[in-house]
Amino acid sequence: MAITIALSGKGGSGKTTLAAMITRLLTEQADRKSVIVVDADPNACLGLTLGVEPEITVADIREETRAKGASNTGMDKIRSVEYGIQQAITEAKGFDLLTMGRPEGPSCYCAVNNMLRKFMDQLGSQYDFVIIDNEAGMEHLSRRTTNNVDVLFIVAEPNNIGCLTAQRISELSRKLPIDVKRKGIIWNRAENDKEIDGIDNFGHIPYDKSVFDASMQDKTVFDLANDSPAFSAARKIFEDILV
Image (tube, rainbow, N blue to C red; front, side):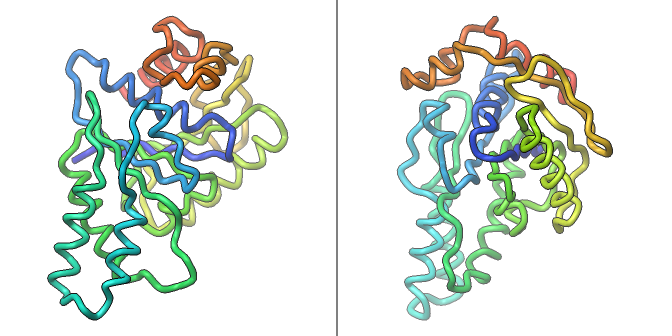
């Protein structure tokens, strides 16, 4: 069974960069594991950070399946969704990427979402690690895109808004119809850790100009030096929590 790592945080907190760093760390392990990375943030940027451009999203599959409507039998719909998800998986060096795309519109997608959950669970069983980059509201997790999360990283900056957001995400995770086995905060662009009652503290990642420069120069997380301050801190947190 795959180990599922989910990341959440408000826009600009650095969670997508951290998700990409974890992906790189997994691909560089001596006993390299199979990894699928799920970009579940509607503002899909994870592919860019990893240097991968998806051609189709799960949202595209959902819309296409629903548009076909009654013209398809139940079995045809199931096969269409299954085939579509397989087509949406972008293969890269050391990992696969699946981009969820925009959230549902006002129409009901219950039947399609049920099929998506089924095949997402099947996909998870085919990998050693599943990494899910969520928005702050954890929309896809709240709709049970997956049923279990082994580790939830709440990424926040060490200011009042960051603390408040971290508390809200933690509270939301307790209300979701999924099993979150362990969760904690990673303070990003921080000089030290902060403590929040009731939430584990996983550590902090310092401001790193090389990360900023990489994003401005359209470079990927794989272009960061091994000893860059941010990547080194991410490696330590990863090893402490997951290895």
